[in-house]
Amino acid sequence: MIDLRSDTVTRPTEAMLKAMMSAPTGDDVYAEDPTVNRLQEELAGQFGHEAGLFCPSGTMANQIAINVHVSPGDEVLCHRLSHVYNYEGGGIARNSGASVRLVDEPHGAMPASVIQAEINPADSHFARTSLVCVEDTVNKGGGAVQSLAMLAEGSAASRAAGLPFHLDGARAWNALRKTGEDWKRYGTLFDSISLCLSKGLGTPAGSVLLGSRDFIEEAHRTRKVMGGGMRQVGILAAAGLHAIEHHFDRLQDDHERASRIGALLSEHPAVLKVAPVETNIVIAQLTGGRPASELVEAQRTAGVLCSAFGPDKVRWVTHLDFGDDDLAQVLKSLEDWN
Image (tube, rainbow, N blue to C red):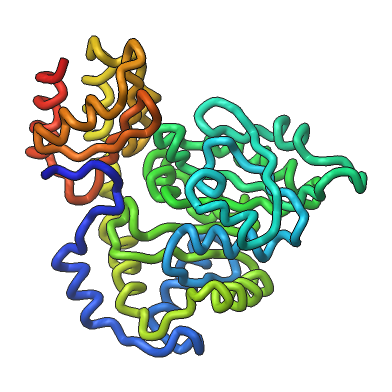
């Protein structure tokens, strides 16, 4: 089966496995794993931050960041489409006792004007707005890239209001490959960043949370409370170091293959519309209220796995293990479907 349900389904390459097997390790709970320390330090430097913290998953990295930034009863400002709101098990409420204020702009955008308008007044009747979370790329927005200008304006507006600006960068690598933006210039827009290694970069697991030394010191404590402390985890950190060096540039291949799928679907008579394909995610809405399950099952029969992404929407995600021969098979399967 060709699996396009997510870019998390990839397997480590032979070169990545060799890097993992040869990695020096130590006890990371004691901050003594040299490979983890190298990964944290290198990413912090590359993105203009003081320190980093290796976490098992992007969800944990986001939830740690939120927990450090807010107090119980506070409010987090994020987009209606955001992963922290939709796909982290209600963690903002469960882990941090905070409520959520949702923004609803096209494709997951968070303009400064909207951020400013949604900050609660300093009145005891309202929850205290304490954090702004943005996502780049936006998963439910079809892999949409947030423009640097909008992020910069949102950062300035948040900081002017005394609010930390957090990036859920689960697919920030795709955004950076698409735009060619300088990593440090991009990174310094945010007070904290969660960078996932197990999506576009193709590692088995792991995310790195970046921020100031004080922020990461507190995040280390929160990671322990959440059960995220691991021991000789340098084998996973080594996969991340290898992937950053060898898999970043090839993200463009994923983008181009996704664009080919999106172009075909845009002309398909059974498809009402396709979200703009900017990176490696394709989301198509079917015509006439046709159920997503119909196309998902047709794709499965043709040897392709994709995901229902709503009652009448279907998602495909291209990745490291999806090549040109696979692309040809997917395109034919969609051409044959009616």
